[in-house]
Structure formats: structure tokens, C-alpha cells
Amino acid sequence: DIVMTQTPLSSPVTLGQPASISCRSSQSLEYSDGNTYLSWLQQRPGQPPRLLIYKISTRFSGVPDRFSGNGTGTDFTLRISRVEAEDVGLYYCMQATQFPYTFGQGTKLEIK
Amino acid sequence: EVQLVQSGGGLVQPGGSLRLSCAASGFTFSTYWMTWVRQAPGKGLEWVACIKEDGSEKYYVDSVKGRFTISRDNAKNSLYLQMNSLRAEDTAVYYCARGRTITYWGQGTLVTVSS
Image 1: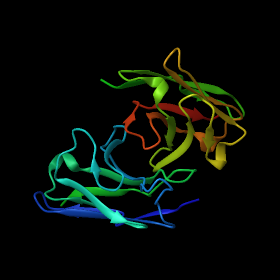
Image 2: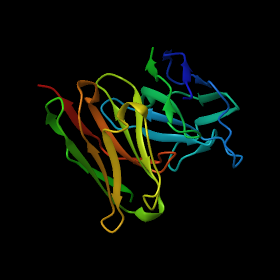
Image 3: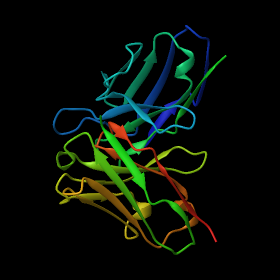
Image 4: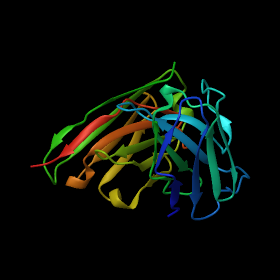
């Protein structure tokens, strides 16, 4: 199984400041079709997860442009350019390249 | 508007069975893979199972193979998860979700396995 490792596991951030979360996979996530199926999800307290980014860097519908993703192969990063109060919650990376699909452990974003 | 409305959770004894349902609307259900994901209390997300558009391919996480069965009824725009031989460690909120890359999520339904 592909292991997804996120760092940090907790990220205290000042409002208006940037934040970044890293995700490393135990093997390359590039699929045979040339795509890399790495997604980022946000889970606010008490809510279902919500897709933010898919295929490394494509923002999902309705996601603010302060969220961005990049990376290649086995190393990926989610960036928030200016953290807002509504961004508090858990963030997960997920690979959908190889079954069984797997998630990172989650990173808790909180306001300082 | 894409909607995934779940039902069927609850309390069940170890060794028991439960069937989860997910009613989809707002998109052409028969053209999407569908997925189940679970989240144990206070824990992270765990992918459980996936089914192809026509039901011809199904994939499971090892911990549920032989006990859980994912299925769908495209005529009813519905996804199902039949869970047998339930264990305490299956206690979780179960989410149905659209697609292999999981673009939309249901509201979740709690399954509690306890005597």
C-alpha cells in the first residue's frame, strides 16, 4: 500500500499569514495515463470533508484562490496564501493512483 | 446541485450486519465511480471501497475484504455498503462519495459496533 506522510501534524498560524502543509508518498503517484492523482481535502469541525485540490494543483469548484497545490512524483505541498478564520480545521492529502487509496494522517490548522 | 443523502447507520452488536445506503441526485449517477470512506471517532480518514460506473469492478481495503460488499443500482441512483461480521474496530462515521478522486461527499452516517 502507498503510505502518505503529512508534515506538520499541527500548524498554528496567525490570521493573514501564509501556511503550508507537506505530503510525501512512499512511491510515485504518477499514473499510467500521465496524471498524478493527489488531492487535498479540508475538514472543518463537525463537517464532512470537502475537496480543495485534485491532480496536484487543480482547484475544485468554489475553492478560493488563496489555496494552491504543487509538487511532483512523491512530494507535494498545499499552500494557503493568507489564512482566514474559516480555514481552521483538518487537512488531508489523498492518493487515488493505486488501490487501496490512502490518506495522510491529517494536519490540524489552528489560529495562534 | 450534487446531493448524496445517506441512511442506514446505527448501533449493532459485534458479529452483526448493517446495510448503508446513499441516494444520489444532481448528476448522472451511472457515469461515475462511487466510493465509501470511513472515519473512526477522533481519527483520520480511511478509504473503504470503490465501485466502477457499471458495477463491473470493485475494490476494497484489506481490513473489510470478505465482510463488506459495495454495490449500486443505477436505475435507482443509489449506492450501498453491505457490512457483515461487524467488529468493534468498524465503528466509524461512513461517508459515501462521488468519483475515484472524491469530488463530493455525503453527510456521513454513524455506525457503532458494540454489545
